[in-house]
Length: 153
Image (cartoon, rainbow, N blue to C red; front, side, top):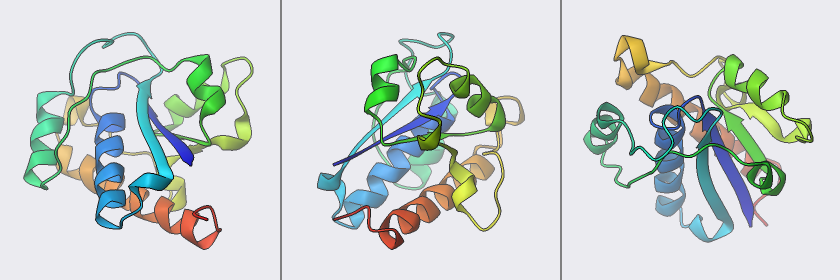
């Protein structure tokens, strides 16, 4: 079973969106039993809070359901994850500064796409549709990467 952890700053917008989008994708393809999917924050800013209402609205618009409570990533979660997929360069740097992290399993989500980039941060722009599209592209490309590299045995 592959453990995938999606990470952003507060764990109320992008990383829970990625978690729920990827879970939905896996369910549709009958692959849910091959994965453990979580999401976490690099900070304590939003710990205990639900997914941000605008993130929830965009997911609902795309028929993706689920709930989430924000939490900060733990050293145990870092150690047990097979892939740690961060949303942007700042998240990447924050994770790489943690003592003991296996740097070989930390990637930016959209590095798996044909257009490597940071996932757009909707916090100030309120453009959750662009964020959704970035995450969908990243998750789709990441799943294809896993399939083509025989991770789904």
